Amino acid sequence: MVVQPAESPTLYTAAWITRNDVIATARATAVSTNVMAAEL
Image (cartoon, rainbow, N blue to C red; front, side):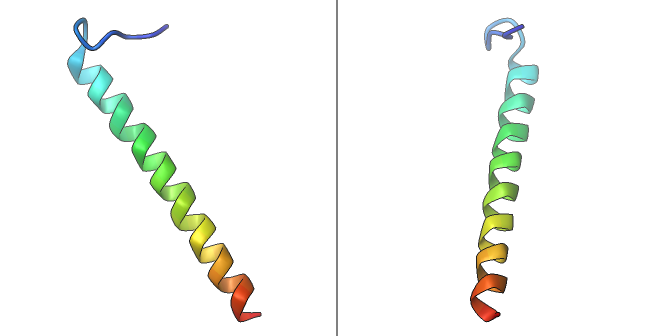
């Protein structure tokens, strides 16, 4: 179910922030993994 921003801005914003957190975490993990691989 897709929640439209007009219907529930709070829920939409929370989902957007959560999505960005997931992307940021994945990027940070990838970067740290690359750094560890480079050090080996």
